[in-house]
Length: 291
Image (cartoon, rainbow, N blue to C red; front, side, top):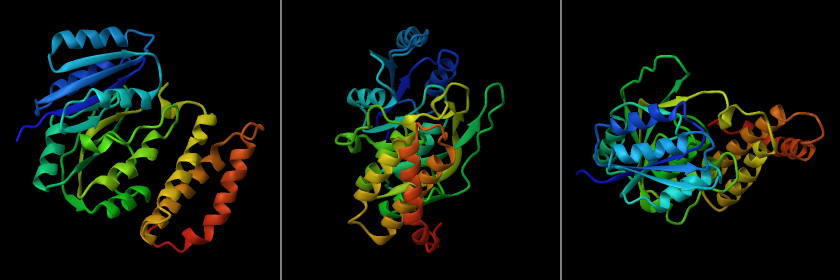
């Protein structure tokens, strides 16, 4: 059982971090991988570095494209993936050497369709200490979606997970939006029969200046309101459990906008929308024992 796993890595202006990322991938103990580096119109040396890795290792291929954002780069990488399974790694992050093997093993051992592990939060110039598993748990899709939307055990993030590649054949990451993972993950989980989570911390999530998550608040931060509206509509004819979980996630997003949006006149509509969501959902979530 040594099936091909495709690893999609969007690359944009990360010349300081890309080498550590790619080296950590190529050192994986699970060797039957293809690494798809998607140069998203980088203006630094990242694109040339991608070409260098292709020359060094036959498992690496690269795609050069005009800048279209993270979602567009991932979607392009998916179209070029040949593996039965697929995963996403951000180009400024690093992984423990058994990251891929661990996810593949727990997926196979539990006859699952998606496998999840935890991140370890990393900072430049600090030592990274990964941690091995102390337990794992198998979820039915509905339970996994609820766990994710309640933001309990694991994150709404595309990275740190291994998926059947076929699940992305009819699901795209939304172009030009922030929080693209929140728009996609519940749909992907909904396609699975069984999902396994292990608490090993094997994915090194790098916090750095200039990353998407550290930029100043902008209109794009308000994309989460649109995504949550789509989420609640998707769950409107599902179980009460999933409807409550979606409402919880929407309320957390509304708090995020209401608390963080600058009061400078540019975000009045979004603030008003968030306030209305909080008023509408407040009594409902106060009665939800899962929160």
